[in-house]
Length: 402
Ligand SMILES: *Cc1c(COP(=O)(O)O)cnc(C)c1O
Image (cartoon, rainbow, N blue to C red):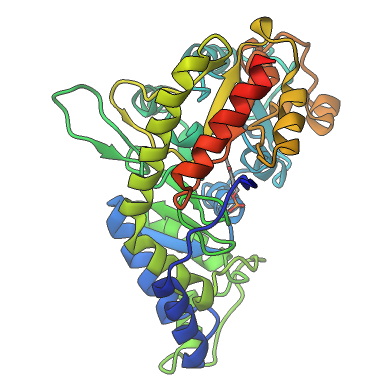
């Protein structure tokens, strides 16, 4: 049997919506994108949603909107994807890495507090021994679909006077609350700006795509304008009949708009966001119970109290001391059996670019470094069958027990 790492869920309705866009005569940003944006804003419960061609573009424009400047500091987790930190470098600004919580692999609050304190005192922090810049933002990332501690992050951002931008690429939907008595809060509600991804394997997809959401009028306006060459008109009005030909370039912007083809897929997927989530939840629960027998060898991800996990990824940690083989050997042996797995992530501070520019001694961000050697992401996608999932568990059992 072959089990891929991911299969997108594309329904007949998804296909017919895209086809109807193709037949409509309007392919690029237009009415379908606008509809997708308003549906998305409503789902998250925020004022503005700006559809873009990737989450990376959304993160870039989020930092552009808050006027990030050369030499400014932005706190990012080291346990994340390339995009979270590279957007800081687009401005020649400085990424300040913090470690992850060993349980959730989201940003660790102790490490964040230490970093904030060090920066505010102009003291050295790993990777940034000398820094004169101003702290402008914290970018938490909700690892695998479980939200970081947004309540604490928000409070710290207020204390240290910086903006919070969520890298919400893994979370649609996900919730957090402060106590059993309080209401659930949707991802994107406690930050200044949140950025979502519609890349092929994310919770919903448009092939490639992203969304920036915010309640801040000026930032939304700026992001929208910069997403289309910095043109002075409400970007998409230019494409409609009532829009005139006249525009002014007010800043050197980018080409980050989403097409109506992609947005029509996005809207169709958004209608199924709950059922896709239910399917992932069911699969995650099944993994958890099936892997209990393997608890000597693997540690499963757990939903923490006051969190609702989106289950974008199911990343286990191998107990290497109990195993005769390495993580990479496990990956290769699973591959031989037809099961494709992945690793999320090699910490950013260990990559050659960051090692060269922001060198950090080994052992500094120890939770991330330890997790990285043990991490293994198992296949999980809404259309995964019980047979496929059983085959993954069976294959993993064979590989680990030998
Ligand atoms: C996928 C991903 C991104 C980037 O999303 P794109 O839409 O591909 O630009 C950013 N951050 C994280 C954590 C991701 O997993």
